[in-house]
Image 1: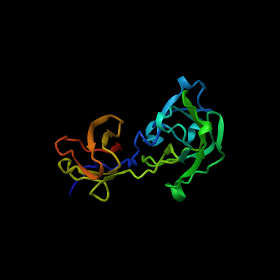
Image 2: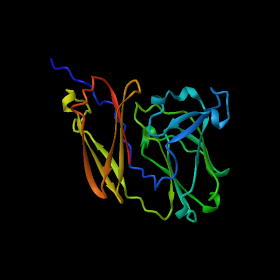
Image 3: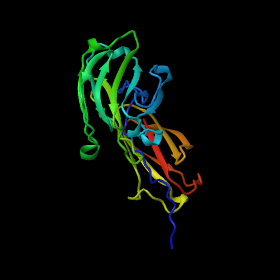
Image 4: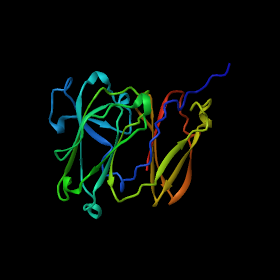
Amino acid sequence: MKIKFFLFLAILFIGFISNSQNILPFTWKVSFLDTDSSSETKDRKSVNLLLSWERQGYSWMNGSGTMVADFDLPESVTDSDYLLAVNLQCDVHKILINGNSISGFIQNHFWSDRDQESTFTIPSKFLKKDKINRIEIEISNLQYTGGLSHNKVQLTPANQKITDNLKIIIKPDDHVYSSSVDVKFDIKTKTSVKGNIGLLIKNDFSDTVFMKSFKAQKGESVTIVDLSEENLPPGFYEVITVA
């Protein structure tokens, strides 16, 4: 009987997000009204949108709460209106930017259309050029996603066309390798400028087992990731790529 090494059963597929395009951070501060005692931002827990809720110890049991992120505006595009794209695997009750109401209730679409985005035009007058800006999102009913992250909150200049993308290509259809020496996969990128690809691999205990940076050439390119000599033991792993 052939025994399989379950090496990449939990895969995180992350779309390409360039720092010059999305001005919001990946890591937010979160506080849950039902289970947390502190409402001070500095004392809130962190949540990374590149990871699923459950991989960070959160679930529907946390109840309702608020996500907060602070950000600066790029000097070159401060006079532009912005587009806010939101796709969070939870119920969204309200979105505020610098106290200005952007949206009311957005129902979770994980089971019907998990890639559905809600987009909003943010007038430049809502944003501050020389001060810290803050976006707040009231949430509840965090959705279990099976370890995969489909969360996205992106703020980009309205006059900036985004064509960049990134994709992890795993050759086994079931994302399972039978031997550690076979562990190879591709990262396919399409970029408007040269950049870097950050690769992070964690095991099922959330320990980082591999981290490396690769060059991303302008245009379309494929980066081959060969982990055959890393001697990864059998187990579940997650792969995170950010460009």
